[in-house]
Length: 384
Ligand SMILES: Nc1nc2c(ncn2[C@@H]2O[C@H](COP(=O)(O)OP(=O)(O)OP(=O)(O)O)[C@@H](O)[C@H]2O)c(=O)[nH]1
Ligand SMILES: [K+]
Ligand SMILES: [Mg+2]
Image (cartoon, rainbow, N blue to C red; front, side, top):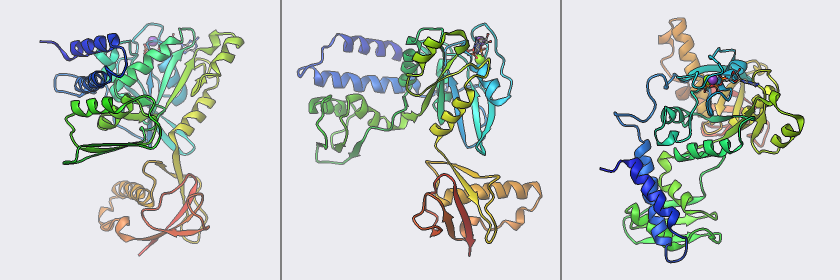
């Protein structure tokens, strides 16, 4: 019986020899949808393999995690030790690192977890080496550093991107602006707010047919490709993750070569060994993570600027803030054995919050639990 990998190869071969035109667009749409389904099958963790495994899953700490992806010996572990002070074995031979090595960096008052990972090789997404487990860990990170050795061909960059994309990771991209709503009846209704230059309705129908979707509203609000549409249908297995290209070992190249590297978007040239430009890398990391620092101000007192509560921008409401405080409080009360004194959660006791900062129009402003906080806001919680 043909394996999933064989089936994928067959479809890719057929797509390569099919020219794109009006007559073939239905067929091509169908092939793309089939391919996406097979790839999902390949990457879904089963008891017999796939997913993360022993030595790969580590406890998550901090407000966000950053994973390192790269070919062997590009300097991932050297960078890890440089950033965190946590030693990760580095050596001149390939596959020095064999498991996930966690470390932590404290930046702007936020604890950020750093995950040094084993090197991957081309074909990792198809099950070569431990690449699948490694990329599975990266897929759960909030930011990925693609570490590249500047002495090696720049085509390595593209190969790594393809490996990540093949795993459902979308790099430095937000989800396509397509609103998809499945219905019980009424057929397919396809509308678009911009001219579609990459897809026609035949292709869309072929994809829907392959996914056995007979009735749905599809509102396309960008010049989408068929891959964008499939990304929406496969939303559960897609992760949109920011990436920084850490271009390592610049100590080994000329100034002229270095100039060229500065033109690459989302990149940061560094030397892990010498610590060159690592500050810039941390700054870029901070920007990409888009974290929200909130300072607490006890009523009638000055704000506490020494220890912000740090939230991710995807969960930064007053309620998220309060829950975080609660976690800290429970932890603290466990430490001093006062569990019984916290019988009511702060959320239950919450009356309102008084906020100063970028998230509010008036300084200060009274807000409720659903209010979204912004970076460097100051908050006072008023209890019932
Ligand atoms: N010249 C130079 N060499 C470096 C730099 N960073 C790392 N190296 C060297 O590159 C080699 C590989 O470094 P590692 O940190 O082990 O690389 P890795 O990517 O973790 O390798 P694997 O774990 O095997 O995938 C070592 O000999 C390092 O000393 C750098 O900035 N400049
Ligand atoms: K190495
Ligand atoms: Mg290593």
